[in-house]
Each structure stands twice: as structure tokens, then as C-alpha cells.
Amino acid sequence: MLNVNNRSYRLPRHPTVVVCVDGCEPDYLAQAVAAGHMPWLGRTLAHGTGLIADCVVPSFTNPNNLSIVTGAPPSVHGICGNYLYDTATGNEVMMNDPKWLRAPTLLAALADAGCTVAVVTAKDKLRRLLGHGMSGICFSSEKADRATLSENGIEDVPALVGMKVPDVYSAELSEFVFAAGVKLMQARRPDVMYLSTTDYVQHKHAPGTPGANAFYAMMDRYLAQLEARGCVIALTADHGMNSKVGLDGKPDVIYLQDWCDARLGPAHARVILPITDPYVVHHGALGSFATVYLPLGVAVDALAAELRTLRGMEGVYTREEAARRFELPPDRIGDLVCISERFTVIGTSASRHDLSALDVPLRSHGGTSEQRVPLIVNRKLAGLDTARRFRNFDAFDLALNHAQ
Image 1 (cartoon, one colour):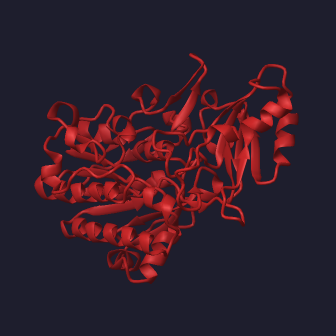
Image 2 (image 1 turned 135 degrees about the horizontal axis):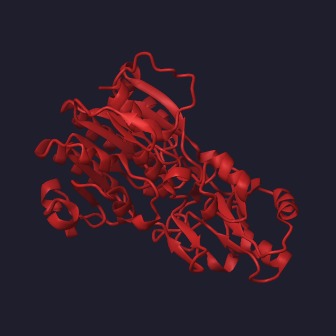
């Protein structure tokens, strides 16, 4: 047994694959299965275990992937967004450096226990965090052609996979993840494998549309190949996805920095959007979660009460309330945390968001409205208390402790 972040795990007896499908609102699966595009998943739901779980809020990529591989919420592992305000330096920075990680990963612990471990992620922003302290294979689709034995535990990845490195804004970036997973299982047969995709398709295509169904049909084919090789598979998501537009089809945005500047004076408050990453073409850095740093002397509770009255604002929480409610590290969030409603997003200033690259109506995530995600295992899990609240970071627990 391994103990990681106060949770115990058995070592795998069968090759075990945990899959994080970025942006996988459960309706994507329901629509694709109903239309006959996912026969493997249809069989798995009939004969395995299909649950709905909660991801962590903010419902963004980095916090949830790290929750899945640590088995713990951000209050434990420290990764509370893709992006944060570093109060020590006064700089806004990406949270893709392992220095921000406050807890060990299960992947590293499994490798230390003698398991062979492989990690394939779509975007390179996650690779260093997921592979921190881990011996084994760890590379991204985005930079698969640059993988080396010393840095990634593998080389010549495109030759192994039989695909060229795809464009970062493409469905093929995620297909490369699945294709690599199948090839690694054929060639190396790792004991544990973690596969993490990108949500490019989900930002572009609603559930049940041809683009979405084609993506999930592709995924289904690769998962069937992994199961055919005897793998225990646990599938979950880092967050859901929703349309974020008004009746006119244009993004429905609360420009929070503009509001704060008008209320408190220019540059007094600082609004941070933790969705921010280098890949903003498909969401324009607009999500449903923001954190606000306020100057000394501001009546925080009174300002929160004002913000709650804004149209489209679902909830506004003080630092202490947000840390407690959403299991966040209080020293890495602002004085206020703001969450917008299902069809609304939060921006900083209208002048700072370039939405010219949005060629379809905006779809995004970040709030509690994107918290429900699938949690599926290709084994019938007898004796499981299905009435309890499941989290996406229960995936390794189910795969290692219940499905072997």
C-alpha cells in the first residue's frame, strides 16, 4: 500500500490507465452514446461503473489535473489556477512551474514504488507539473518531437505514434495523446498511465454536434484498444463546458476591472483571471471565475455585497469563505473570489480582451456551473457507496483500490 496525501492506494495488478478528458461536460458522452458514436462507452456504462462527480473550483485545467494526480484539492497541492498574482514579487505569472506545487503526486510515488509510469498530456504547460519528481515517461503532444531520453524518458515519439506533431489548436492534439497511449501500451506496457487531453473541441463544438461526436468517436476507438490489452480504465474530466453568450450570440461578459476602477478609482484593485494561459484563441481569457486583490482600507464585505447585485454574477466570496467553500489555498487567492452564472463570463477590461479570433459563439468554463463531470470505470465496482459525493480526484482511488 502507498500513502500519498493522506490517502492509501494499492499497487496495480493490471495495467491501469486514468484519462482526463479536458472540458468533458457529461452531455457530450450522453449525446455521442445515444447516437451510436461510442460503442465502447455504451458497453462500459452497461457493464462497468458510470458516475457523475464534482471537479474542483475554479473549474480550470491546472487545478483539476493536479487534483487528479495528487488525490487532493488545491488547498493541499497549491495549484489554484492556470495563472495567479504572486504577491511576493508583484507579478502575474503562469502556474506551470513545479515550484508552485505543495504536495507530491501519486504518479511519482508509484514510480518510486517500482511501477513503470507513463504520462502523456496534450499541452506542454502541464507536463512539468504532472511529471514532477517522477521517473518514467512524460511528454506532451505539443512538443513530442522535442522529447529526449534525459528530459522525457523517451525519444522519437512521432515515429512511435505514427503521427506528425499536430497544431496546438486542433482535435488532433488530443488524438495524439490517445494514439501515443495505445502505442506505449503495446510497446512498453507501463503499469500506470495518465492521459490528459485539450479542450479545443469542447470550446468550439456543443454536445451532439458533428464536430463533438467525431471527437468522441475517435476517443472511443482508442479506449477500446486499451481495454483489449487488459487495461483497467478510469475516465474523468477536469471541468465541464457551457455556452457563454447572450441572445445576440455575443459573449456575455462582466468586465470586472472596469467595474472596480469605476467604483474605487483606476488601478486600486487588481483583477486576476486564473483561466489565463498561452492558448487564449478559443476562449479569449474569459472564464467564469475571477479573484480580486483590494487595497487596504476597502470595506471588503460591503464591496462584495455590491458585486453580488451585478447581472450575471452567481456568487462573491471573501478570501476566507472561498478558501473554505472551494478548498483553496487562502494565500494564493485575492480578497474576493467572484463566480459568474452559467451563461456569463468575467473579464478584466474590455480593452484588454481580443475576441477577434472567436469564430464561433464563446464556450468556456471556470465556475460551479462547470463542476459536474463524468467518472467512469470499465469494471463493475461492487460494494461502492454510489450515494456519496464523488470527486474527479477519486479516479485513482477507484482504479487502484476498487477495480483491480
